[in-house]
Structures are given as structure tokens and as C-alpha cells.
Amino acid sequence: MNIFRLILLNLLMLLLVSCIADLREGSLLSNEISASDENHGRGLLAAASLEHGLDDWLKKKTLTVVMRDEWRGLITKIAGRPWNKEDLLKFTFRNGTFTSQLTFLEGGRKGKTVGMQSWLTYERENDGLEFEFKENDDTKFLLPAFQYFFEIPFRIYNGEIVGWIGEAELRRMLCDKVFVTWNKIEPHTENDQYIVWINRETSRIELVQYTVRDSFRFVSGEIRFEDYRDIEGVQIPFTMTVSSLNSEYQDGDDYLHQIRVESAEWDVILDEELTLRDDIEEIGDKKE
Image (cartoon, rainbow, N blue to C red; front, side, top):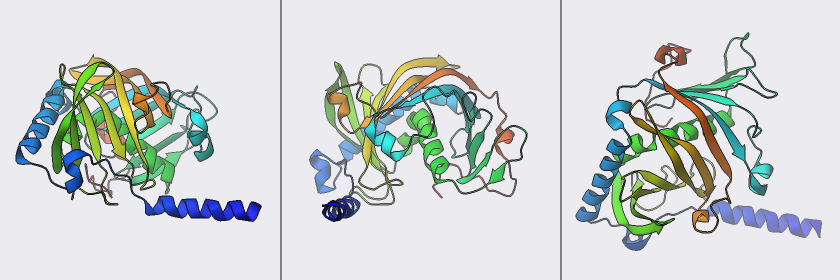
């Protein structure tokens, strides 16, 4: 019986690996976007970026947030939670890049810092040790994801392929849905797909659905943005809730993890403090 279960598990994993998450819907299934839908989609993304504070964001260098991140559910328990829900974290990133740093302020790992400079990861165990550059897949996955959550209004509107795909109601809010990806419309392993839900009344982003190619290509999810607060002209969501795809329509409390920001400040950490090695070229918004 155990051998039979093992065979079934292996077959299931092979099936999942062979699949690829696909967010296309409606006319996108024919891999075509009309000029009018592209123009409308780009207009909506541009309006959203301005509503979220693009002009002021461009004047900033770094954002530092103090936050807690609660991971829930069986899936995250099996996969391994990166920290405990009571851990207080300080996360700082350089705007428009994938250079960032996270420090544990409380808990058993208090004082430990993990970070990334242009996709090269490093860590130190406490404030008294030198930073050591070493490959860490968790850091490489989590820190860019966190940063992208905070910056998505300012980075996704430059998507290579954009198309408006209709409207839908989200918790009694009428939203426009905009599809975004790169390279080609159909799903592929190099680039993720996104559907951005933009509140028609406020032009704010309420929800983003996405694929996760860097993890498992069959994985997809969504993140809900709430409690926006104006921090020096930029709208920062103080609650971000990550769920499996379409869980929003079933139970808003059925989430994988939830980020709760306690404070957010611009440029309290100097841009150069995130540059640990001068020999590493800043590659900005590029992937590795």
C-alpha cells in the first residue's frame, strides 16, 4: 500500500510539473489583444500609477517598513513558514530594483539580517558580524516578492503586453480587469501573467492575480490590498493578504499569509547603505 501511494504521489507531481498556470480568459484565449483593449488597459494602469503616487515615488530612493507577516494553513505549514507570526520585521528596499534587506527585530532570530543586491543574496547572524554573500533560495524568492507587492502600481504599468479584459464586481466594488505579461500572451516559463483589478471609482488597485513561474510553474495566487495610507504622497497598503487564486470570491479570511505594516518611512536608510559590494552592478528592474 505504501509503494502504491508513493507511485501515485510521483505521478501527481509529474502531472503538476507538466502543467503551467494560465490566467488568460475571454478573447485572450485566442492570443489576441485588440488595439482598443490595449490602449484602454494601458490608460487604466497609467491612471492607477498616478493615483498611487507615481510622481512622488520617483523622487524617493528607499522605503523602510516595519511589519508582521502571518502565515496560515496546511500548505504553508508543509512548505515551511519563513518566520513566526509574532516576529517583527524591518524591510528596506531600493525603489525600482531588486535590492533589499530584511532584519528580524524580535523573536528567536532577533538581529539577523538577510538581503539581496541585484539578485545576489547575503546574510549575517547578528549586528556584530560581517555580511556574508551566500546563495539562499528563500531570500531570493521572498524579498523580491515583498518588494513587488509594495511597488506593483509603479512597475507593472510598463508591462510589454497589456489588455483590458472587462469589468467585474469585487466586494461590491466595480473594477476593471487588466491583463499584463511579457514576451507573449500564451503562458510560458520565462514570464509571469497578471490580472490587475482597478477600482473604477478610485483608480486604486484592489486585487492582483498572478502566476509564480520562479517557484512552480503550475502555481498561481492573488493578493488583496487594503488600508491604503498616504506616506509623503505615496499610497502604501498597510494590509496585504495573499490567497490561492479566486479564494477572494469564497472567503476573504481563507488566506495563505497576511502582511500587516506597522510603520512606513521614506529614505531613513540611505540608498548607499544597501550597496554592500561596489563590484556588483545595479541591474534595476531586470531579472537575473
